[in-house]
Length: 325
View 1 (spheres, helix red, strand yellow):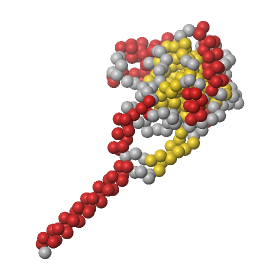
View 2 (view 1 turned 45 degrees about the vertical axis):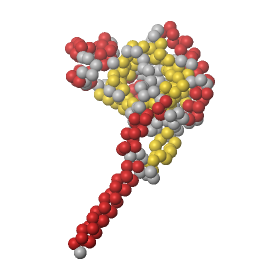
View 3 (view 1 turned 60 degrees about the vertical axis):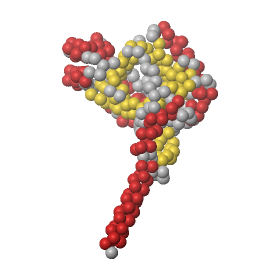
View 4 (view 1 turned 180 degrees about the vertical axis):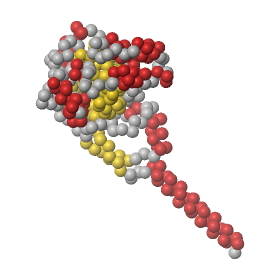
């Protein structure tokens, strides 16, 4: 009787262990769980299975790039064929010629058309932009845009007369000088006549800091808040797929608040190269069937401001930076 009782207890233990193993296995694979993600420029949805932790780790090793966990456009090529690094950026101070366009189709159609014309996919990335200014819009009313992109400082300065809106795309300037890096941005702001000068020690501390030096983190932000009275007034994330065609970068963007836009840009080093760059952008846009933005239909930033920052828009309209639509 004792032998039979022990055998029965052991059998129950084996059954319970097997049951728990099946439950854990089901949770790790979850083949029937449904989630929805947004894909394409028009915010359509598709169904995909949820991956377990071990499957995600295996997938990351196969792709050799980090899993962002956010919706991306369908590329039609294996993920391992997409370069893991982000698309090339401008130098610390360069002239960016950019036009924003509408595209009537979806992301897959744009990809197909670009690749058919001899273009190539450069990669996919997700980033967050946060824009800074004073309460009375000291910078933006002069068409100067200060932002951080994933924590990295960038400054966009107008070329020529800030009130000249010729060539602007939906109210947003299409030619501007872009300065990147905390030290370069701090120096430009300190030398500028648009804002009160930062303390000399601010630029010295930032310039002396080394990349990755945690002691310099937040120096510029602290000085902007305390000395100038600046703070963030707009922030949103963007899912970007970048293509290259005829030397132009083509960015298909889907913002976190639902707005989509296609940007075509070229980086030049001299103002004399701007007209040729604008012609090249127009030719690429025509080949892809892109349509220029109409007044009131702006890029991501203008659309965000018109939806969520009416007080800022009013000041920009009064300053002639944005059209009154």
